[in-house]
Image (cartoon, rainbow, N blue to C red; front, side, top):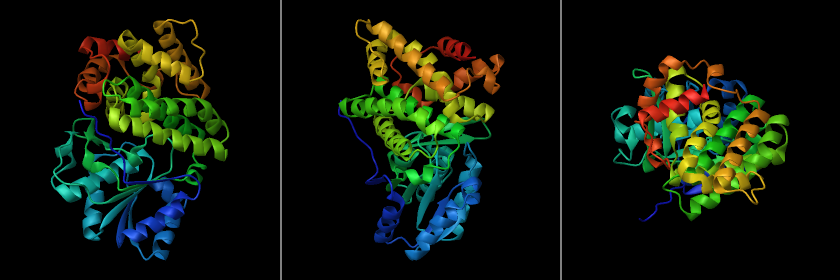
Length: 382
């Protein structure tokens, strides 16, 4: 089967990336941006700094700062109304996965009409979204360069997975200077999200040699630099290497897709309004223990990328070594030990499992699960 590889047309990475990107935006001829972000970034002054740079480049802007940590259909609708009211000709997302996903939803509906609910699933849109420039401030979700958009439907209490080539940003920006101020907890959660992207992409049934190379290098970098980024937030080398790592993980999962960790984590986020990266981190070892039934050799590769010596180990033993290494890394960066610590209740598991089995991310998991098996994984993670 032929493989497709999706990535933004231009990606600017490393120190000084933001200044380079503003010049790139100016050359594209856009006149007025809707900046999609959240209130904390406004309070930190990052939005005002971006607006100043845009003004210098003769680009007007209006700010939508109403994005919630788990962006909702209402957020998309409010941002879209502001875009239309101000006749913006492109969108800039500033932040982590939440602003990026909300901006994708706004830009997609701006071009295609209807409601963001109409685009749940895979490639449901007819036309490219309004041009989107995604400026990243966290090292984790890779939403700044992917075709994935996760929006919470408040009415159904679920996270909708929108996987659509038309949501791919035009330009992505990863400047580690924008990541230095991120607190340890957010750094840990987003870093473990990136690790989950890499591992799920590597064991995916849609993996190929290109995604494999990206995934394993991402695992290697995250294992080496995430503890440093968490412990020493101003460590520029760690921040820059994590920016590259999460981008590599994004390249991997954007093209090989994901698995049951994300399918299950989306339900926890939608049902309990929990942080996505933390849910992924807690579920990751439990899902991989299930996947080891069919993907042990691949998980042994993950162990080696994490620095584990697997000489003399069987594939099954190598897989277990990978799971142990994942758990150790999560502990080292202070991820909660289980779902119970996040307030998840056993009586909700059957509903969570039913919704997880409908999530598009589960389609590429290496082993398809029954409802009972998904319930079992949730229970093991409690």
